[in-house]
Each structure stands twice: as structure tokens, then as C-alpha cells.
Image (cartoon, rainbow, N blue to C red; front, top):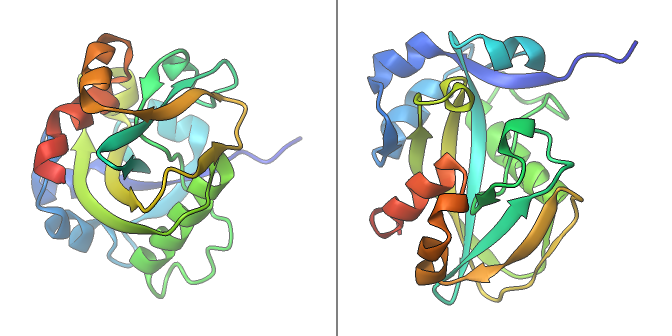
Length: 203
């Protein structure tokens, strides 16, 4: 019998004590300082995490930009989160699993950043220098997917648009201008809609 997938979570009460919100929170340090205290982030089985809103799964959501355009794709039928299939997205990322998490208790935040690199590398190949900056926290309790997730929004500014897909679930990938994305806004997953509206504030 295969072992259950373990995913990184924090208790919802930590999020609420730090300052619950819906949409984007731009005061990043306030949340990072609370969420990545030793003993606060933990791993629990994914089936439990997906159904228990007393936990928030920490999800890196990496937006890649180059020359004023944003990387975008459509989640195909092989997407791990079935509730998001066929939705357009501008965020690369996913669940953090306990792979090589040996340094976790020593420096949870540093280990999280290393895990983000691994997670992105599983989905796409980025063959260009870039600058990585965490620009916002993202929360949307208006639907069942959002209720059990908390996004950490990264902005990667790429020197060149040399990005290719690795995951079969990524389809129709390419860089799009903001007006082009706004024209297809209704086809986008909720998190991407929220980020699209907040791009100017986050940049």
C-alpha cells in the first residue's frame, strides 16, 4: 500500500492571529515571521489537509515575468488538483512535501525557499537568470479549494523568456501581456484572477 502524500501546513489559528484577510496581503514580513517559526509549519497527510479547514496548506505561487509579459498556462487533465482542471493560471507551484527536509527544524524559512526551487523545477525548466522576490500572501476563503490553502506569491523577473514545460498537466503555455490576460480573465483560476488584479501593487 503506497504511503500517503504529506504536505506542509500551518494551523489556521496562526494565520488568523497574524491577521486574517481575503485577497492579497502585501506586508509579507509580518506573515513570514509568524508562519516560519520553528514548530509552526508541519506535515500532515494530504487527504486530511484537503478536507480540514483548521489547517492551511502553504503553497508557493510563482509568477514569472519577462519584458512586461506574464507566463501563463492551462491546467490539463493530468493536474494534481482536479478542481482546477481546464483553468488558466499565471502561478507555478504546488504542495511542499518532506523531500530533503533535514534542515527544517533549524531554519524553516530557508528550507521552504529551497523547496520552492525544487517544486518549480519539477514543473518547468527555467534556463535564464532571474530575480526572486516574495511579494504577497494570498488567501481566498470563498471556495472549498481556497479554504484549505494559503498562497505565498513569488515574483520571478526573468532576463529572457526561456521557459519550457516538464509536467504533462501544463498546456497552452506562453508569455502573455496584461491586456491579453485580462481578456481571458473569466477562464482563470481564482488565485490567478486575484493576482492579475494586484500585479501593479506587487511589482
